[in-house]
Amino acid sequence: MKCPEESQWLDNNGRSDMQLYQEALSCMELIACQLEQDYDRPFVTHLYDRCNSAIHHLRSSQQNPNISNSLENLLDTLSFQRSLLEPRRDNDNGSSKKRINCEGRNMAFGSGPKASHIGSECDERSVLERQTAVDEMLLPCIPQGGRLDEVAGLHEVKQCLKEALIMPPQYPQLFQGVVKAWTRILLYGPPGTGKTKLAKAIASELKCRFYCVSSASILSYWLGESEKLIRELFTKVRQQPGLSVIFFDEIDSLCRKRSSREDEHSRRVKTELLRQIESTDDDESSKVFILGATNCPWDLDTAFLRRFQRRIYVPLPDRETRLAIISGQFRNSPLQITDSDWMKLLDATEGYSGADLTHLTMAAAFQPIRDLQSSRFWKFTTDNKITPCSSETLGAMQYTLNKLPADRVVARDVEMSDFMKALETTPKTVSPETVQLYKEFSSSSH
Image 1 (cartoon, one colour):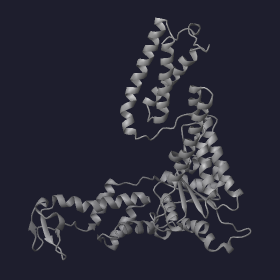
Image 2: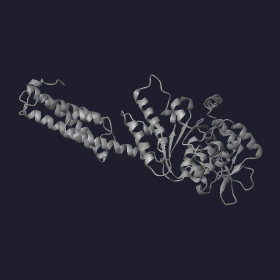
Image 3: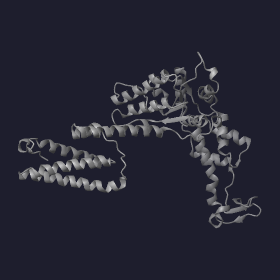
Image 4: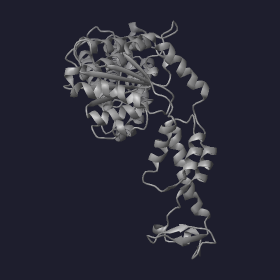
């Protein structure tokens, strides 16, 4: 749309109407942006009213038919935008889901009391959103992760966590002078070895404030918001009485090695995070413990690696741990496996992670359920339930599954053959080459 010449229109106050015309265009551009996102209802309403008022003022003061036609087209476009926003308003319920750039708002409205008021409202909304984001990182204080002793294996890792988090409050006299409790620990190792599970077990056992932070919860595409959110998190944690734990899950996504090709936004986020981590040591009254977990320790920036006082390798489960994980999965389910079968199964699962073993047991436990669909002969159990059997079983009944009462059908016990079938469809996910990388990192970083 061609903008009319500024010399053609002046209002009765001697003010150029070009300013009103440009303001109307700015408002319409911002409204158009809202059509592509979840919109801020009060802000859009204000934009519409300002634009509509400006266009009507310009129409009432113009005699030139070309200018009038331009303004008429502008008003039609504004009405069309309003019609697109109206259906979405009914589903909005008055809530604002999208943060609007305060600087962009001030540019649209210029300076003055109204612009300052809008900027102030935006600042208050941003602070409230950051506080809400920090609260969402706080895990509920209920025993969801069990206790540390319930985690199979990982005895050295659990011992270090107990020395850092559990013993200092119980025996404060032991941690004085040169002996100080660890305040920053990094857990690293192959995926699925229990790093996050250990963190949740700590949260359940300590019953303290536990903040779970990831890149998705801390990073924002608005310039400067990520740094503010990091400051808000550490400020709130330092103000809390008692011990607080900040757990950075997949910390490598936040603290990768810096390079010359890195954008300024990433550098500022890392610098702010480093500054806040160091500030926890400056305040002796604050009790903040930082726990990090990563599958790629070699990708971490050396500055962050140096901040962690202990770097603990979380290995793949050994033979004893694999036995504990598999048998623990069948704690409340029958399992028909002999000692020789156990030896064979533990040999076959060498190199499996804890998550791999969980998937394996699920696949094996599903085999008896799958066999129900093809079973044709059934027998009664001692508790009057119905379970599959062979045709040679004494008293066997011949029925299809859909002919039996559903509430009385039970699957047979899990057997070694079920695990062998599960091994064919559930391979291990960690290669020997990957394990070697962790060993080389461990030897070079200690």
